[in-house]
Length: 170
Image (cartoon, rainbow, N blue to C red; front, side, top):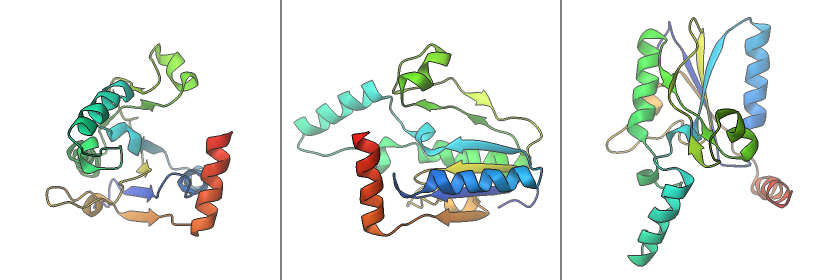
């Protein structure tokens, strides 16, 4: 945790409302004239979408299951190191996971891939993390201890299902 370079993480499952909560935080930051660096959880996937397809096929051949939700598909070490670095000196790097063609086209990349790492913006007041794993603790990593404010978004189950159905069918 860092008084000089605080970190806020909003975490929750897909469709839980993390993006809506994040928008509220962004408005607060704007009103308080705070400059926030942002990173998103998908940036810490271990594999691109094509690589993950190969990993899934290999796992099936071994009668195992793997998805983006299991620890081995994510780089908790990189996530933890990113938070440590920001907390210590207000600096760090980020990359973006490009979900769609619209996100990928400006980078001249394919959906399901990552941008190159880039430096976080300079002179920010706060780091804002959005998505899954913002408070993950394993036997090897403790991401939660580097977060100053951890907000876990957990809607009622029916609302989450409805939101996912609407999103996935549109």
